[in-house]
Amino acid sequence: MNDRNTIRAIIYICLAYVFLSLMMLSAKLATRTLPPTEVLFSRFFLGLIFLIPSIVKSNSFSFKITNIKMSLLRNCAGLGGMILSFSILSKIPVALNVLFLNSSSLFIPLCLFCFFKERTNIKTISFMLIGFFGIFVIVSNSLENTNFIYYIFGVISAVLAALAYIGIKKLSKDHSPLNIVFYFHLFGSLVIFLFFSHGWKLPIYQNLYLLILVGLFGVLFQVFLSYALSFSSMQLIAPFIFTGVIFSTFLDWLYWGELPNNFFILGSVLIMFSIVKIVRNEGK
Image: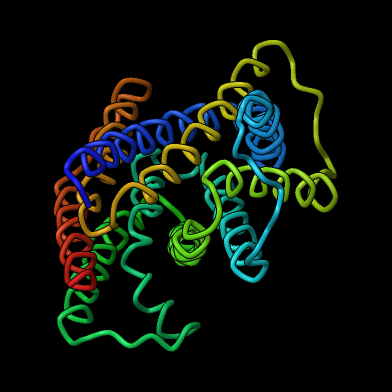
C-alpha cells in the first residue's frame, strides 16, 4: 500500500462522512413535514439518477454481479440500517445518529464471528467492551429527554451497517465502487417504493430542494466510501470516520443551538478509541 493511495483513502473517507452528515441534516429538515420513508426513497431514487452520467461516461463499468450472496448482504443490511436511521432522525441529534453509524465498526468482529465463523482475539473483545461502555454512557444519560426505543433502533442500525461494510469490503475485491453503489441505490429504490410508499405526500417547493440534497449527498457518501475502502485498508483510515461526528456536531449547533454534553463527549472518545484499536488490532 503506497503513501499516495493512503492519502487518497484518508481524503475520501473524510469527504464521505462530511457528505453523510449533510445528508442526515437535509433528511432531518425534510422529515419535519414528510414521512421518513419518502425522504429515504428520494435518497435512493435521486441518487440513482445522479449516478447515470457517471455510468454512461465510465469505460469500465459493468452490470455483472459475481458475488450475489455478498451483494444481497450489502444491500439488505444497508437498506435496513438506513430505514432505522431515518425513522429516528427527528427524535435525536444529527451527531448522535451519525455516531451510531460510526460505531458500526464495533460490531464488525462480532458479525464476522456470528455469520462467517471468523474468530477474533481477546484484545479485540476487550476493546469492543470499552466501545459498548461508551455507547452505554451516552444512552444512559440521555434517557430523560428521549424514548429508549430510539436508541435501540440506533444500535440495531449500527449492527446492520457493520454487515453492510463487510459486504462492501468483500465486494470491492472484484466489483467496482460504481457497481456496488449502483445496485444499492437500485435495490433501495425498488424495495422502498414497493413496500413503504403508503401515506406518502406530494412534496411542496420548500421540501423539494431538501429531497434533492438528500439524494445528492447520499450518493456522494456511498461513492467516496467505496473509493476509500478500495484504496486502503480499514485499519489506516478508521480514525478519520469520526470526521462525521465532529462535523455533524457543528451542524447541530449551527441549526438548533445544540451542544454535546460531557457524557456525549466521553462516550464518543471511548467509542473512537475502541474502534481505532479494534481495526488496527484486527489488521495485524
